[in-house]
Amino acid sequence: MEITNISEEAEEFTGNVWLIENDETVLIDAGTGDSWEEIRKLEPVDKVVITHSHYDHVDNLPKIVDKYGPKVYAYNPDNLPVDAEELSEENTVEIAGIEFEVIHTPGHKDDSICLYSSEEKILFTGDLLFPAGSFGRTDLEEGDRDLLIESIEKIVELGVDAFYPGHDNAVEKNAEEQIQESLENARRRESKY
Image (cartoon, rainbow, N blue to C red; front, side):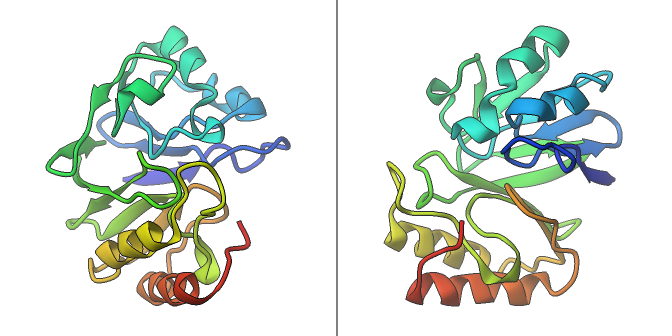
C-alpha cells in the first residue's frame, strides 16, 4: 500500500489529503484551496473517508464527488456538504484492500475519528495529534481539552508504527513515542496548532 500526501505542495492553507493506492484509490480527507489541482489529476477516486468536518478537510469534497462520484464516509454525514455513509466506532472501513478500525476521537471536533489498521500498524489521526508531540486545537467550537486527552488515551496503546496526521508530515519512525509525547503535552499545555 502506497500512501502519499497530495496536498504537500499546496501554497494555500489546507489539511493533508492522503492518497492511498492499491486495489482502489482512496483519499483520507479532501482538503481545500489549491490542493484541488493535484486531486483533479487523479483517475479514478473510489472512496473518500473524512476524519472530521472542519472546512480545511472537506472544502474540495463537492468537486471530488462531482468529478468522480466516489463513496464518501464520515462519522456524522449531516456535517458534510455531500451525501455520505455513516461510520461509527463499531465499524471497520476497507481502504485499498486493508481493514481499518474506526475510532471516535472527539476533543478537536465532535465528529473526529482516527482510522487504525492493526495489520499494517498505521493510523490516520486527523487533527487529534501531530508530529513532535503536538496535538489538536481545543479553542474552536466543539473543542474540549478533557475529551481530547481521553481520545489520545484511546490510541496510545494500539501499537502504531506510523501515523498520518491532518497537517504536517507523516511520522514513520518512533510513532508510539510521539503519540505518548502528544498525550503528555496535552495534559500540561496548549498546542501549537
